[in-house]
Image 1 (cartoon, protein in one colour):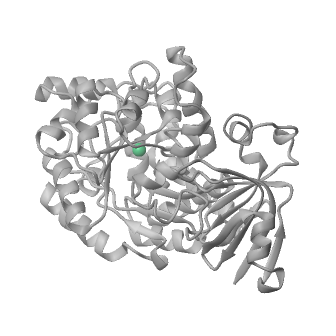
Image 2 (cartoon, rainbow, N blue to C red):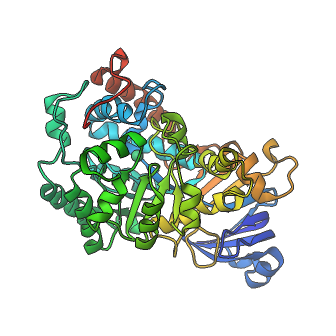
Image 3 (tube, rainbow, N blue to C red):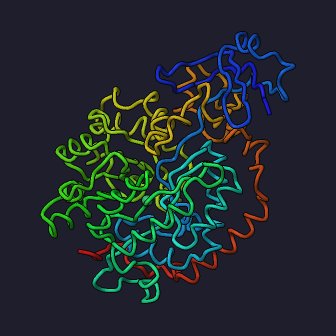
Length: 476
Ligand SMILES: [Zn+2]
């Protein structure tokens, strides 16, 4: 199957030179970009009679598909259920944990399906999912069915809190925690072996763990070592708040990243999610090790993590650390809209440091595409519009008033456009989102089931009672 998409008004290629093509055409051959360039040149190389379909994109702009560097597909049924005055640790220990404890296998699959539907509508084509809590095989099937590209895994932790926290049950503790790091790593290895490379390579499986207080040092260090042995990556939450850093200092005498680094746990196959509470010295150690960071600006804003106050993301970038952008779960950050995160990243440090040279549109788009792909170790195949790469891209409708009129396409994408003007999202050479709906899903049936299941989970978890603490001393 060869498709010619012709006369595209602009293509932000996000290649190594950030080339912007105007009046351009792209030839899609099965799952890959067979040709890209000025329309007149592509027309000479690929006559119209040699293709199966022609799409006139003269009122469209193209960017690579967005790469969400940190998401929790299992969390999607909890949208706007928890209060909005929670700091990180109360959010995790008293609200998210009871929620997850009441999410069953099918709930998780439905959460993943609606999560992917939202992502496709927002131009996201690939993601790094923290992993299933119940049914990894079900989530992998869901990714296969929808047609997206992504990394998933299995949730793992091994350190129980000394006292059973509010909202937790004994049964939940038994289900949620592995008895020790060794048992957890054995199960994670089996999960990677079962699912890595599924769906014709669209699904990758990593040695993901929850990270921070509910995971032992042995599990943190062991997950990265195991990932290296299996030739995959690992990701976990760390240094997610100043509270976590202070607890770590009290207990171990050092902040979280130093504790992992001192144990030899850093490496170039590790993506640390959040990483807001770090020292300059820790940034140096991460840069040296090639460790990468998934920054989730919406979660920071919603849960008061302090990205603009204590975060050192511009310093990380300056030090050469690869920083990607994540939405986080829909409850933590509020949405799975990577364009919104890209907008925040472009501007939040300009404002907080009163320095207009920080980050900006060009870097933010790179972080949301090619550099996100680098975090996932997938940049040889995705993240930019180049010949030979997978056909994962977004088409914007330039007749939408977000685009009428516009000057610089790059600035318009980052500061002006939203998913409202996304016309199509393609993954692996297929238009998965077009004509206002996800083509591979029965959207109406899915919405119905998601609403019913979300209400049932919230009821089972008792979260509607609003009696959970809004501050946490768990693991203190
Ligand atoms: Zn997370």
